[in-house]
Length: 480
Ligand code: NAD
Image (cartoon, rainbow, N blue to C red; front, side):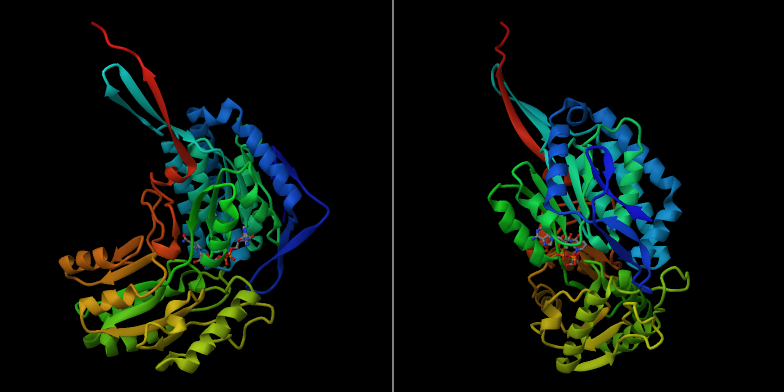
């Protein structure tokens, strides 16, 4: 399978291409066109020209029919797309099927909203009307990561196209083929004006960097690490872009003693190992009330040790490989450093002895620690690694959970409804789940507090990042 750049309505290739590898065995899934600054410039120019024509930015009915037509085409290929997602990313096939379904649902949601981007009108004085017109912001650059490339593409491109922006998509190198397959289906919808959506692929960052500093790009929507998000903020300052930044996290689960420890541990183990721990919201720290601590140690260790690790295409597998060898080696180094300084190692993960030499598997690890300032309680370790910590009071749990620069998500596990809401209010995170973890919906805004990001995606508020509000003031006079 091959993929190309999509620029101004044409799928074009350059002289160079790069291989997309299956992290389960190192085999070649296909090849993608290698791009850089020149391809980014061409894509930006096409998106800019398309934005300046009225046939897209001022045509909500067309935008709706394109988005709904795209969703129908994706639906017809859903199983092939899920398989491709597992081949490129490694995740368990059930997770890939869920992600493809979620992405299609999200595109339909924004297809519906495309015809409802309202402003408002105020009568400010007798005979003076102020119209607040919500307009598309312009050209949006969408930099999409590899961990959930389908749904994270959908949640950015959905609101951007629905409100009338034109876009340039820059996929992660590791999952370029999946992004290209999604956009190929969009390119086949009759009536899509050329240049409205463009894609440039690359292994380096030259195209991405140009998207961030080009004066013709109005919005950057980036999902990725906090370190890269900060670099983007600096580089975007000169041209004063609108920024939507969905960044890293260190999600905390706070467990009270009134829940069933075995059931809760099993669900937290699933939340920690989703996409092999490579989800921004994955459970990373588990704070447990002292009276339930020993039970949770036993059950969480057992649940993580029982996780089946292997090729994600095997339906019996719950955890696939990490995205690639450099990522696996980096996580393994961080985890081994944590083993050296934590209070207790409960489960020592590592490379499975029977793994193919070119694969990037890593089994889960669990440690106990009582100092939240340790690097492994503070830094995002993007893999299957969990820290168990103890608390005595609600206040101590909140203080420990909020002792982080991140603020993406957390969960509270208790049967006491008032306590659950009290805790949810006190935890400084964009999302708090009660007796659940990792549930995200097209309708419900998500985003980060503090260094987990800026802005919101999903839901209606996602429009804010892709629109401008224009004040049109008119004196119309009065009658009589
Ligand atoms: P990353 O920060 O390495 O981002 C890689 C992407 O950034 C690539 O597309 C690359 O081309 C681009 N890039 C790199 N340098 C750039 C620059 N100077 N200017 C513009 N673009 C540049 O992240 P990753 O490793 O691909 O993804 C994992 C991270 O993503 C984790 O931190 C995870 O928590 C985060 N994430 C966050 C969310 C969320 O919703 N908050 C969702 C998924 C992933």
